[in-house]
Image (cartoon, rainbow, N blue to C red; front, side):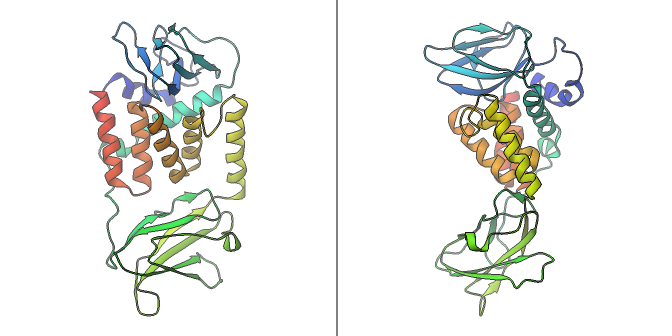
Length: 306
């Protein structure tokens, strides 16, 4: 097990302890342009989002490039020229840093990171592979998009019902489409659980698939998410821009795995990810049943740890 994994596993135990030489003093949350980092006396290597930085480590941006760090004191640090990191001083919002470190530590210690990986989504007996939402996972919107991998040339009816409710199920004729966004007029209730299934060939003569379930976040959770986003904005970052990694952490903490996956995929399109972040992505993909993609993320983490 390498230094990165050991530190991630120990983070949850050390966050409240006084800063020691073995504690990270910053976390890379955004890389723009060509930026290298140097750990101790090691050789420079490309910086990665989610990378933990220690006292004496260097951040080496090329001309016009920059890295954004969040320090353990809870301050934003924008690095545009060669910088050697020291113990942070000054007051900030350390909860931002602590939340990110706890989330990375949890992902590193998850069963998925040691081989307990779910299988990929497989077609059911009806010939349809349910895509999302599934596995009882929480969704952040009252009008989610329900999707499945179907058979070419087939038509589908989608049935959605509130679990434990007395209302009649909603039936939508979607034709050959393999996704459907719930309309505003039929928006789901905060905090309620729903099940869905599709009928291959239509509900009157077609084959019904196994039902999948998901839950809509509660109003309280929705308010908490807004507060998270406000906290990132007050920190001086755009939650959907420079602060996207922190937004992914907020989604993961609330159990919004689909949103967390999408955010991390967007982060990966902008810059390289650290081994810790690939472990987090693998954990998230496992939770939503995307086992094949999860294995790829875990393999990338393994490759970076060698």
